[in-house]
Structure formats: C-alpha cells, structure tokens
Image (cartoon, rainbow, N blue to C red; front, side, top):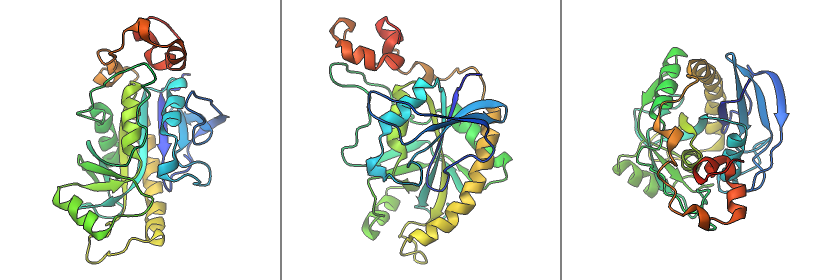
Length: 289
C-alpha cells in the first residue's frame, strides 16, 4: 500500500497513537536531514507518514527547522496530501483557546528563511494566491466538525519569526490589520508543498490569546502546555477522521502547480540540480528520478 498522506505534528502532537503496523524510515535529502524519522503506519485504513516537526523530544526551534528536507522527504515517500497540525495564538476574541481554525491565507513576518527548492541554475515561480489546498482544507474543516471540535473555517495565519512571542505593539498591529491567528512554522511548509505539488492544509490549534487580550497580557509556556495537551487529543481525532475522508484521486490545481512555473530552459539546468530535484521536476524537464 503506497504512502499518499503525510501528517506533520507540531507542538504537543509528537505521535499518532492510533497508527498501527508501524515502521520507522530515515531519509536523506539533497537539503540535509529531516527533523527525524518518518513513522509509516496505517490510520483509518490508509498508509500514512507521520513526522514530528520539531524532532524527537521537541529539540528544534522554528528558526532551526529544515523545512526543505521535511517536505522533500514527504515527496520521496510518494505523499500527495499533507495535513499539518500547529499550535497558534489567537488574534481575535472569537478564536478561543482550544478552538480549531482552518486558515486559508498566510502573512509572512519571517526573516530570510529558505522557502524554495529552486535556485542554483533552475528558476520557477509557482502561483501562491491561494496557499491552502481548497479541497484538503474543506476535508479538514468537515473532519473537525465530525470530531466534535469547535472549528472556524478560513482566516489569515501570521507567520512570525520567533522564538520569542509577540510584543504588545506587534500583537495590536496584527489585530488592526485584521489578522486572525499567529504561529511560527506553517508558511514555509505551505510554500514548499506547493512547489512539490503536494496538497497542504493546516489544522491550527488555538492555545492562547497572544498578549493583546486584557485578561491574557502575558503568554507563558505553562499556559500553552496545558492547552496543548487538550488540543493534541482533539487533533488525533480530527486527523484520523480526515485521513478516512481523503479521496485517492486528486483533481485540484496543486497536483500540477509546476506545469507552467519553470522558467529555465531544460538544456541550461545544471546536471546536479536535475539530479537533486528529479522527484519534483523530472517529469517537466524530460527525465525521471
């Protein structure tokens, strides 16, 4: 049974308890090592690959994550869908701690993170106006409802650099812009998944009100951890539900995101780049990995 579904677990979600028939797979990529081993197993009757985003024991900060290796490893496994679970802060009153949000937009406040597979002689520009796969996002939203979670459909995720939390001035500014939730990891994953032609959606798990709220004027790790525990239980149910609902055939635009994105003429692409990126671009440049 092929592995077509990937799960990336964030803070608090370091394993999928319902996975059966498990095996660990260590992968090497042209971009270095992923965060840890991929746990291959069966969930809701389908083979999936689980990766703990921050590594075993949560040892990597958002600024240290090798996003390219993490997503490229999923591509090597044959993954076509990635469901990401992430802890976020709320920037609006209606997103209460322990609620879930399925964002459909991102706003970048990171500083110089590498978020493309391209360069070194190969140029491509993928469309990113709609960064979340609409079909996968809909499945995630329906699955939250089926699992009995309080969920909000749509919204903008501010991706900040971290690892510190926001200042009060920053938090108030994001609110004035109409931003909805804030986190530190998902934007780079979404960009790279799109380049790899993998459908991507985020299940955002609200842990706190950031620091803007008059009754929550300081975010602490203890506060977040308490909500992480509750959120992780909910996320396990939601993801299992979503995996069972995912179709085997993809009809979305994510599957052909590179079809008209590669600018460099094939004959000018360095051989080393062709070899390294073959799992992603091989079919468009006339060769196979």
